[in-house]
Length: 327
Image (cartoon, rainbow, N blue to C red):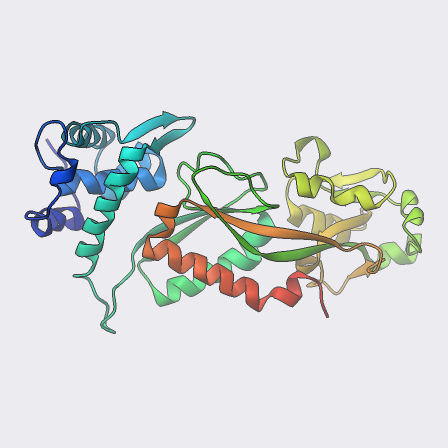
């Protein structure tokens, strides 16, 4: 038994019944189905059949069957298998443009009480721990207040930008990414500084110089597990400080520093929230790093994704001084 497509896909067939899609009928002479195009849209954006199936209320077999049908009608492959999912071919990106036109036509029928187009859907973000909590979460909340039918999923991860963004709409990384077939947007800078707990500094003294840091243990990332080059070189300002508590999670860095584990190299926008932390050597140690946002161009054309990206950029602007540790 075939599982019915959601309302958008059903409506698409009616709207596009007379649409001129003959340019895609290169093999069988049959025009592509609007339903099949919207299935491609879901797979192209997520990179995964199972995620597309969940979003559309279909099963994996139906997704595969509809993609096969679309490929027969356009006369070529629209998806190529890559590590961890699927990527659009050149023909697939051409078909995706037609699919976006279908989606736009359907969405134009849906308006909110203010007479404007209602946004809906799920936007999936991957970002570092601190960014997720203090930038992405407030931005997502703002979008949700304005567009209640938009859900935002935030995955906290500190890593390089992935070449295959299967299952993700947006990635936020530290350092300029080297990506293919994706758009990289510079969001802005933030600063790392050295911090110590008041009690710890009272018991052990406050470092007076860079050379003096050699007698203090460092709270930071686990060196062998750090994947981000810019974060890896952040400690090059100091002599070899022995490791104290290390973690893949920056919230652990903050709490370990507060618990007197040593001197922490912490994001200023996180450490400055705690009155029990004191910044040391602020003139000598101010490591400036940059947040970048990565997304597919076709993903950014989704109104709900664009709304989330706009909200993130606005939040970055509002928090610019806080991010840099400026009083």
